[in-house]
Length: 52
Image 1 (tube, rainbow, N blue to C red):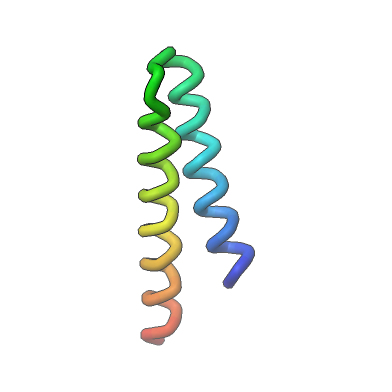
Image 2: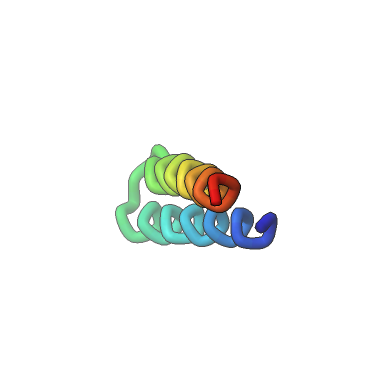
């Protein structure tokens, strides 16, 4: 479960960084958004798994 959480957060942050690189913004909004969404997704997956 820990590897799944790390993977989902890592992929979301990676996608956010790519978005930041392509958009050329000074504020890393994509990385921030990717980190938050990846963390929310990881927590949701843990809750879903533990409620079984």
